[in-house]
Length: 85
Image (cartoon, rainbow, N blue to C red; front, side, top):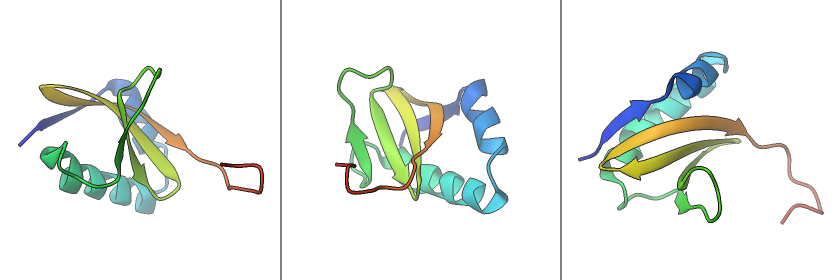
């Protein structure tokens, strides 16, 4: 099982989100990331500051993995329209 660390920036971003979203993100991180790379919902990123992202509803948890998973940032994704993807 992997250890998970939160950067101060990611922890601050999490605290600013609504309580229900905070719970969803914490649950997803605690359920999936300890079993990384054998988990669903994680995608490797190419040419990005962070190596991986985890989808949680409309939010993306960006992280790096080097023996310890370091959560670096949480981003909200806007609504999709006909021009997206």
